[in-house]
Length: 320
Image (cartoon, rainbow, N blue to C red; front, top):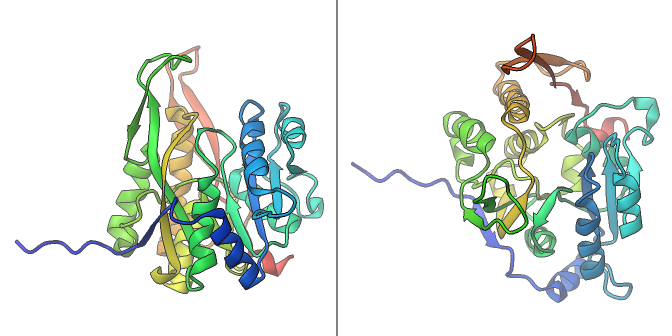
């Protein structure tokens, strides 16, 4: 039986570029860099994420990162205050272009960030990181600063899990190379069946990724968790797979969501895939939702009804 050809996705190591190398490339191409951190009720972790990036990559004389922005997505805790105290510029999605309304969701936060910054290169980092390093930022910037044909860079990593059920402070962490549950059970099968040329991506839904502003401002943006898959598929369709790269970032730990929350995410991912496959009409209503029914044996009513956002914001350049 002949060997099955492996899909080629250009792959780099997150440690192969030094800060000095990247600074030289940044100056040579006269580019500005912004790190954007979407955050909703992440007061416990967002300060540490902000402080690491600020201290390592934003010294006055040799700043690789020009802007460090936290987009507060309707938090009800102290996320905004903690992030600002740690050194980030904080904007609320409710206040940025309030004439355009506001939606809850990660995609909404990243779309609204385009009104806050004019940087040429955007690096997105999740706010709930527990074990990581600033090489996440430098690694994602490397291909964009050194390879003009690359427009979208996805991170991948071994995910760290607590071995003990309670996940206490002294719980050992085990590194596992697979992606998250939604990646392995939803996104990877979809790519294999519908977009096999992208099936060589290790973690297509990774929350750490980077993109050129000239590209993202032309793309429709799902308001929720579908943004990572949507930008990947739209980039491949418009620019080709040669415009996409991935970077090995080592290991990553973060808080894990409940299976019911992951069900909401999976629904959003499937809707994005159906829309890009022509099985679902293009989004015309930014408030479009589906109702996901989930069973839970507690109380008198065993069924939960979760509203799943399926709307998409139009390309930023059409309203910006």
